[in-house]
Structure formats: structure tokens, C-alpha cells
Length: 155
Image (cartoon, rainbow, N blue to C red):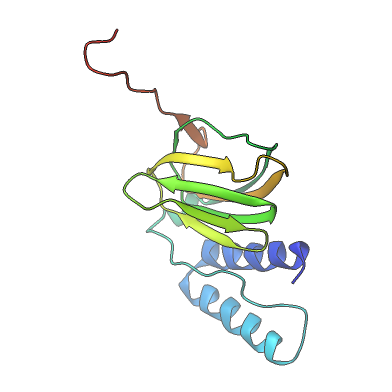
């Protein structure tokens, strides 16, 4: 499936979640039926969302680009995030979970308020690119940097 098709599938899933459980199920069923008919659509990723305030929902899509060997600093995200790797390989780890590697075409879910300890390009030769879909029910910054902790005795 093309990256564009995957983005459309994720957008359909998210928009279905934003309007309620019944429509989310309908979106999933419609996508499954379309695949059976050989139409260019399939469910690329599905994950239940935490309880959200439906009257304040918004979706923000952020394109993240990492050059060879690049990474972000540790951070916390206040909203659930669905990531879709478009190009390259991503190395990621949320506190309390094992490190994971995602390749182009793969998607993942991050629960709200987890500390994202690792978000890095797994390659030192090729770039990595992903789309991060933030499903929020409150306004504010999407990510907050986590200050680096210093060893005991060091100021």
C-alpha cells in the first residue's frame, strides 16, 4: 500500500474515532469491505483510544523528519499519538516499555502522558520520516521536553 493510502486509512480511522464509537466501527467495517472488493483501501492500523472529551476533539498531523543518526530529546505528549513511518526506520521507546523499531509502512500507538525516552532515526546513512497524528481533547502544546536528570551529587 502506498504512503498516501496509509495516510487516508489513518485519517478515516481517526475521524471515525472523533465522532463516536458507532461510526468508528462503521469506518472499520467499510474499510474491511472495501479491501475484500479489491478497492485500494485497507485498515492499516487500529487501536482503541482512551476516554476523551468529545466536545473538544481535534486532530493535528505533524510530519517529523530525522536526518541520518538524528533524534529528539526526551519528551512527554499530552495526547494519544498514532505514528506512521513513511520512509526509513524509526527507533522508539516510551518509559516502561521495550525499545521498538518501526520501518516504512508500519504504524504505532503512544498513550497520552508517557515519557518518550527515545525517538530516533535507526540509520546513520538514510533519513527517516513519519507522520504523527495527535488526537487531543484539550488545547495546548503537543509535546513538553523532559529535563535531563543529573547524577546524584552533581549540580
